[in-house]
Image (spheres, rainbow, N blue to C red):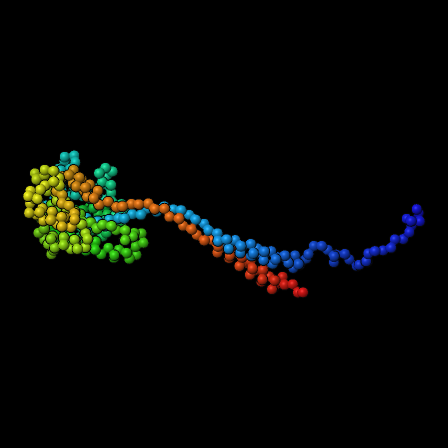
Length: 328
């Protein structure tokens, strides 16, 4: 036993100066040699994802408005200073009644009038001369301010009634709606389904360069309907809008002819109550069509994994050709 323990074993190892050269932990660039291979595998994975053509879909609802272009014509001659009646029975001027009525028509009153929020509205006033107070616009807040401060024309040399000129200007502006396309992305002019002129006057045409019949002919040729509201004396009132042609004065017969020839209507009013009923009738006849449609948008996202795959491949090739290059 002692002999076996004392027996010298045969050496099976090699003596070296240091075992640090055989360290299992890579050092230097060798630690990153796995990166190119990983990037190549990543390239394959994202290429497969791109070939699957991933998509993302969203559904949304759009409200489509087919609006109306409306030109409001208001008489501001001295005769509009005559007395009329308010809803409370208090005497007010025709101008005050007209102002309140037009404001209600534009903004709505929560009762008979719904407002014209989807419509292009312009304003023209007339006495001896016709003046454009507001072009066709969707900015109804500013338009309401203009209407609120309308005053009767008090200069004697500018007094008169030239609604023939006002009709001609209004028809021309409605005909040239195309001009509003320039620089406007918030309103589709192709959605305009109707062009309307609403004339409010209390007298006969006695001034201006255009005769009412001539102006009505232009409006008819340019597909504009004219609605006429004659603000007359209370003594001539029976039922607003129901007077027969034989009961109309010569001036009112001209107004009735203008409305009939262009496909509109003629109505007579004498105070705010009857005026509201007339404008409510026009409001119902000329309503915008509002419809809702659902759309689905599908976006292709294959480009994102494809981009990642290409970047991974390019990075891998770059590393293998430069800092991680392996010499056989």
